Length: 146
View (cartoon, rainbow, N blue to C red):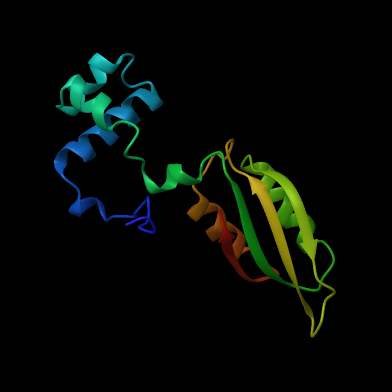
């Protein structure tokens, strides 16, 4: 039991309804749709005691990445300006670049690893990755670690 994982990623449909309602109440508070816990729990259809019991135990998957350092690995064509365009996308959506590592290009492409802080990100990580992959000159992009 000592080596059992502490966290699991579970499909929402497999969760008890109370967890989904607690997540809804937290979202209502985060977005300002509810100003108080009392109002949020009423809107979500749960008791305040259920909210307080489970509030720290449930987080939407996307929010697990918020405020964390995410490492992206990109394979880029070896052409002037592509890396600059990539960095512009990160800045445009609120990612704070911490490190950039690039290999020497071979066969017309280079591997670039970018670590970024995402607590100010204005779009989801999935959307950021989609936009990066859609850019001219990007062969492949993926999230390595978070």
